[in-house]
Image 1: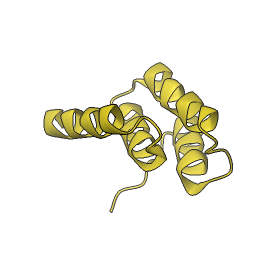
Image 2: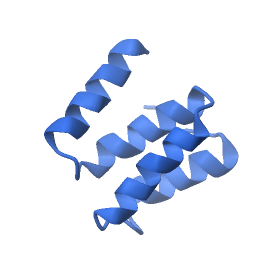
Image 3: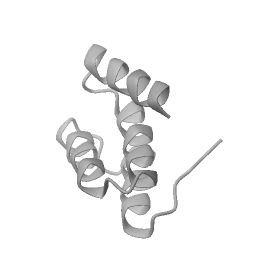
Image 4: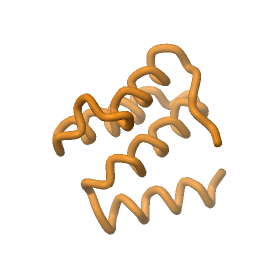
Length: 71
């Protein structure tokens, strides 16, 4: 899990508008019961124009339900 956190944070540092990285990172945070931190990722997705995208919808749903997407 630590490697995933590092990878997501690195991807976001390289491109703060990477809404997919933010969504998946937010879902990882939900799995870790860090919903406030996940909310920050959701807000960032919306700030860069990601409202209405799969990235936004899936993270919002994960925060609301606790159910995340895994592939």
